[in-house]
Length: 111
Image (cartoon, rainbow, N blue to C red; front, top):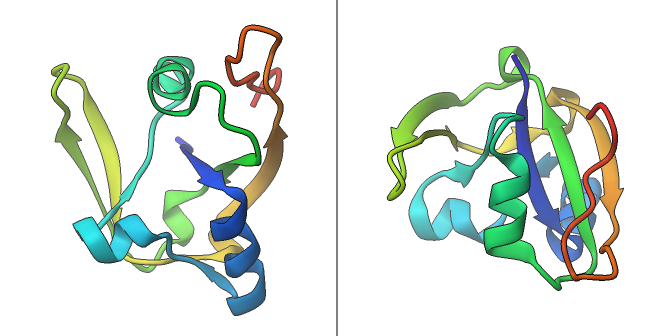
């Protein structure tokens, strides 16, 4: 199982500088929002449509030093939340996410 997180450019650049990923949501909400593969396009459509400078982080939960909890969202689907920073060693792959002509985030094939 892999976890997926869509990161904004400034958060990903900061992570590369400091050696771990900890976006503002971690401090604000206490966790990092993630997704599994099957709802990822719906998440991208709902939250990131038209936004440029996005990156897809593919995270191995076995390499995290933080707890992962699957918690219900408003739509009744359980999403994984990481309760701590993500070390760069837990991030297996990173993909730049372009926008399609309709403003939708284009996910990489076979991510």
